[in-house]
Image (cartoon, rainbow, N blue to C red; front, side):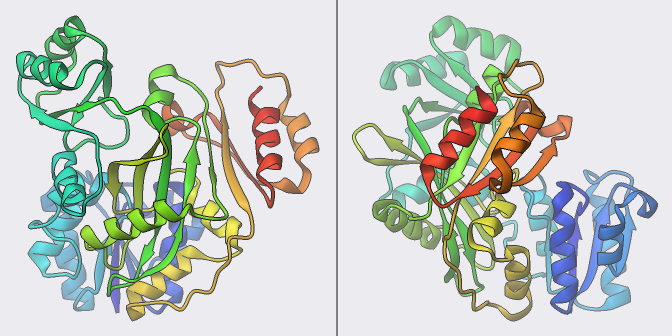
Length: 386
């Protein structure tokens, strides 16, 4: 069995997917930009063959790498990066080389916000009103129908990239005159006020959910980026019943098979739920490790077993709340890093200084804590962020 993994060096912990593939019996074949000598030893040891390309955005180079692998090793069972950035490249390669998984005919369903809304609506799930807009005038007309503020962002955007909160007509003009990217379609959305909650997990190749959990966010990544602020988010030990019902319905509507899913919703002030968007990948940041620490399991291995055998018999219990808590270098805090290490003790399961490419949204330092009681989690948040 052969599996191709794209850009395995980033995020840094994704070498664990390659290691899991190798342990599951795959020839683990990787494509990336760094030279083999630049790979961390754990990643180099987890790949059976590494093919360097000068630029991952060069589709011809990716095609050449996949062709080389098929000629040398035979048919390829799967190709993935588990990274939203390369979804379109993966789909094109699967289409061209007839590899199982999401192909060009369905990629827009999980890449474009306008398509996501149609699928949510077809499943009877409320979502934020939105419209593709080509001009300031169209955007103002949309704002008149839903009221300011509104959100504008690329229809095929990732995270909070090129996302703006506009409060009036003058700001709409500013966006179209100064900020609108020329190579993206733009979608305008009504501003929804609520708390962000997620339904996250993994399906087998028949579409059955083999693992699921939920996270609560103190704020969205967009708000964190715009304010250059720290953030935190934590996993729930019990998924609210209404969220799980809607989440499972959405997984079925999006026909998720053999993939991780990360579905974002707003919990409204009246208790209702409104869909934001869907991602066919693990949640970002430390979330894979939060899965594992919350349940004392190995979700890297579970995913690899699904790729190898179609499903996995995963027995798990959400023993702990896990929480990611960040800090920003620009902010002054009451407690030093050394004080935090001493006071948290065994609650602290991981700490890392984050690379600049994700620091704007996630923070400059990241702490991962776990506890059975949510009150203890919130005390840790205050200890780290006050």
